[in-house]
Every structure is written in C-alpha cells, then in structure tokens.
Length: 318
Image (cartoon, rainbow, N blue to C red; front, side):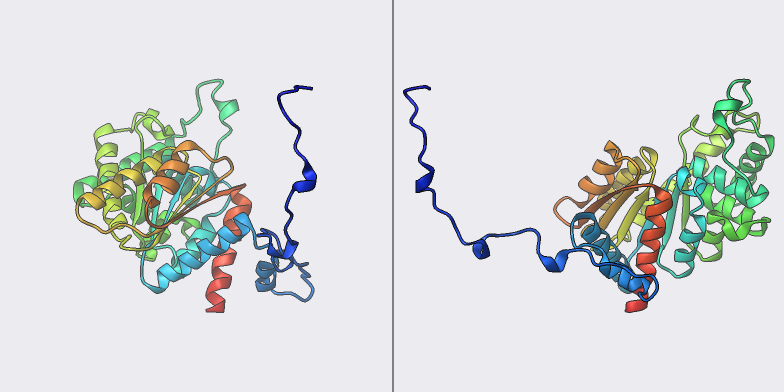
C-alpha cells in the first residue's frame, strides 16, 4: 500500500433519502400490456414506454399534425429502398390526406416507381445480372424515362418529377405510383440525380444535358418548397444516405440566402443504419439554434408503417 495516500473513511459519507433523488424511471413511464382482443390502436400507442425513441416518435407525430394544422409543409425525402419494400401505398395515403405536402426522391426511386407503375415489377437481381453485363440494361425502362424527359423538356417547363408523373398518370398500375399520385393530389414532386448513379444513364437513350436540365429544374423547385419552412414544418428523410441529405442542405441555404425565415422546423431521419450525412445534414445542422431533430433506426418495412399508423391515430384523436 502506498503510505503517502490515506484510504478514505466511508463511514463519513453523507447519504440522501431516495425520495429526494432525481430519477429517470418511474412506474407511470413503464410499458403497459397491449391486448389486441379488447384494446384499440390508440391503446397500443399509449402502451409504449415513455422513454427515448418511443417519446421521440410521439413528439415527431405531434409536430407533423401541428404543422399541417398551421398549414406548414411536411416534406418527405425518400430513397429507392422505401419503394422496393412496398411502402408507396402508405405514402400515397398520407398525400391524399394532405399530410405529406412535398416529395423528393432520388433517381433510383424514380426508376422503381416507373417500373412498378408500367410493368408491375422492379428490383432486378444485380448479383446475377452483373456477371454477363446485362445489369441495368432493361431497354423499356431506359427508353421510357429518358425519352419522356427529352420530349417534356422541349414542350414545357416541367422538371424531372412532374414529367414522369404526367406520363404515368394513365399507367396500368398508377394507383401505386408515387409520381402519378403526386400529380393527382397536386403534391410537388422532385427527382434529384447524380449522373452515372442510375441504370438508365448507361443506355443509348441517355442524354446528359436533358437529364441534368430536368433535375436542375427540380432542384430549383425544391428550394421553393424549402422556403415554406417558415418558423415550422417537418422534413423527413427515409433512407437516402447521400444525395437527398446533400440536396436538402443546399436547398436550405438557398432559401435562407433569399430571405426565407426557414427556422424552427422539425427534421427526422429514418434508416436501418445512421449515416454521417443524414445525421449531420438533415438532423443536426438545419435545426441548430432552433427546431428539433430526431433519428430513428430500424427497417423501413416496420418503421414507416408504424409512423404512418401513429399519424393517422393522432389525426383521429384531434
């Protein structure tokens, strides 16, 4: 034993009564048992424990409903995986109910939406098809999208999203098309692409100047959408790890540069893994000094239906 250091005497310690201690957990915050035989979905919501992400989800839903009551935007940004796991009908339902007021997607999401709307199938086997160089070479997909963009650019001021939405308005499976239903419900829809990231960019029908111009039109439209985050509103990112978080950050600075009071809003990122750009460019930086930011980690096919059900339940309780 080091003779220079004197052991403390624990008998001199001062204790305090438990009732005076600040506690994080109490009985009223515990989960309650949900019985589907007698309980409603509202009871299920109430049964969740009042901690951490469960409380965050309640707060996000409250902000969404409050924003729409004040006629403030609720913007959804979505990557391709959201469509691939079958969630388009839920997003369309919230557009019809005037909850989602704007939709921004990347190029891959647009491709999956077009293929489902036109041919009822999508998401090829990349691992198998890349072996012989046929990955991404479906002729119909490339020609439909690239030719639609080319033709629309010549005759109107529409951007990428609107051009495809108009073209799909009478498609065989339009009821499940995000793009077509954005046109139906007058929801601004924008498609943001990086040249070389999508399968249709490697085909003979690709025109770089057309694709760039149409996506650029959508960026300017999206900046106008973001201007509406005037002291409130909600922005949610569903599974875009790079492109849409970057686009949102630039659109936000454009809006603020042009004088919009884009502050005090709520952002949320939903993804299976929390990546740097969504965390920083969607959740943290935009809400610094004002607003709220949330991160929800989990599979889209579970988390997004849960969110949509929470929203509809809250609307019912109003």
